[in-house]
Image 1 (cartoon, rainbow, N blue to C red):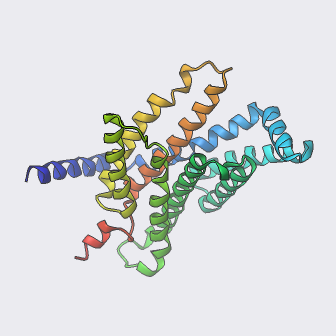
Image 2 (cartoon, rainbow, N blue to C red; image 1 turned 90 degrees about the vertical axis):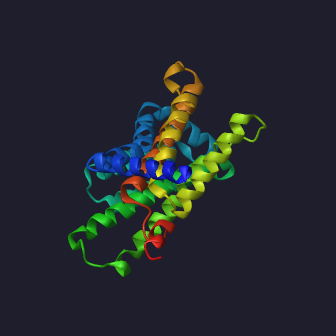
Image 3 (cartoon, rainbow, N blue to C red; image 1 turned 180 degrees about the horizontal axis):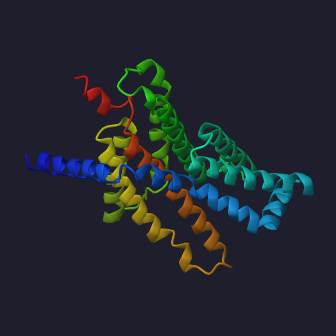
Amino acid sequence: MGQNDLMGTAEDFADQFLRVTKQYLPHVARLCLTSTFLEDGVRMWFQWGEQRDYIDTTWSCGYLLASSFVLLNLLGQLTGCILVLSRNFVQYACFGLFGIIALQTIAYSILWDLKFLMRNLALGGGLLLLLAESRSEGKSMFAGVPTVRESSPRQYMQLGGRVLLVLMFMTLLHFDASFFSILQNIVGTALMILVAIGFKTKLAALTLVVWLFAINVYFNAFWTIPAYKPMHDFLKYDFFQTMSVIGGLLLVVALGPGGVSMDEKKKEW
């Protein structure tokens, strides 16, 4: 009984948090989600020569093609972010950012690095949730009218987004025998499963947001490393990628799990 009371209190807190922040949460979520693209686009400008030389050396594609790659990344990411944040042509912006993720996955050989591949897939999950949100806004004029058939693609986008988001947490699991690591793995895995299947979704996603933010600030504190050291850029990249996944989870909190979830099915039982 005590456990049920504790869970009920936690769910009440999550609902109260959503009511208080409902007006601002989607905006914060979109800003967090696009943060890694914004940071990477700006970095392309300030590290133009380094990025161009890396692509040219890796692929032997020549100065012109390497420069075109950097320019495409810069313009594609910054334009996509501006469109998403201004709520204009969001679906086109998301498809463009999907293209950037795919391009970078190939160009930087991320396909062969499981950790970075899973994080890029998690980033794609956040974009799927953005697409779902844009479809939701398109249907809002029909509020109160059943649209199960029309909205089913949105529901599967939400499912795909939730499943892909949890891949980020799989890269944070630590396989050692320390008590803290074992506890972190158990709790993290349980929360990941809850988000993926859509059970107690808002509470689980909100808990993951808090946990992931704390881990991010502690382990990826790039501001404590001098800018000239390579570790500064590595930690900065990880920090903003993690912030984007946090943005995706905040969208889960704001939008709910969608129709393909245990939370939704419970309403039918």
